[in-house]
Image 1 (cartoon, rainbow, N blue to C red):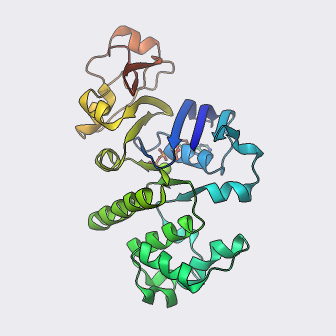
Image 2: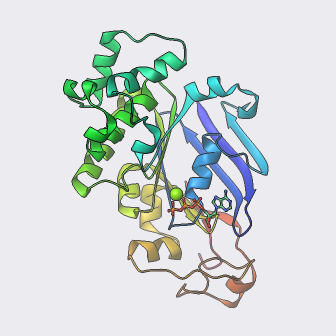
Image 3: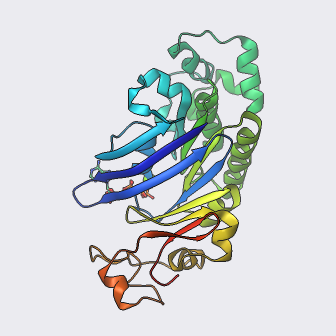
Length: 282
Ligand SMILES: Nc1ncnc2c1ncn2[C@@H]1O[C@H](COP(=O)(O)OP(=O)(O)OP(=O)(O)O)[C@@H](O)[C@H]1O
Ligand SMILES: [Mg+2]
């Protein structure tokens, strides 16, 4: 099974996603990394059908996703977000919030199903009686993940799922996502601005800048010969990206920039077995 975006374009007033391609297999973990405003949430929203692209294709198992009913689609692809509290009705107890996805799809979960969900998510039984405001951020994210996986989706789109959490809790959530990916064969798109987390969790990584993929490939291949922009991000320096349309977005800061980098956005080219870069000098 495979989820695929092909040549996606999406234009806002001052921003556009350009020619975005992605292929996520079931059981695989892919990371999408980029600084704030690079277009990560736009991509996540397209993948969750919260936003329609202007053009391009979206397939699951080579079938056009837009031919699926939303309900069918939501059984296959689910999302988790930075602020889990936003998706949880504060007036409902956790016991209801855990049952809700089943009910929405016309199923009545057994106590056993709910118990196994709690234990898979390492949530204590006591949370069942609580309201969302009584839980910690980490517990709320676990509840959100429980809801997302309750109907056994094939793919999980995780948009900055750790960004609002304390560092120790971030690691717990990452380990939980790794476990769910392994045990339930979920295809995970892990979106973050944190390069370390993305490289730690992902087998493949895509690096986004200004709505453009600058590098994409196997984690090891990228780490062994990163794009100048990725290298720059890894060193943790702040970036000022070029405003010049048509240029490589990194040309203003890139230590290797040549004259052509200012004039022409490089095409994505293959430089390794599973490694694509958009760079004139590589
Ligand atoms: N509905 C919209 N209308 C107009 N512009 C939008 C809309 N949604 C997003 N944008 C713009 O698109 C750009 C990319 O936004 P997006 O939220 O995808 O970035 P991001 O990488 O998720 O950033 P962050 O790390 O801050 O979450 C931003 O400049 C944003 O202002
Ligand atoms: Mg975002």
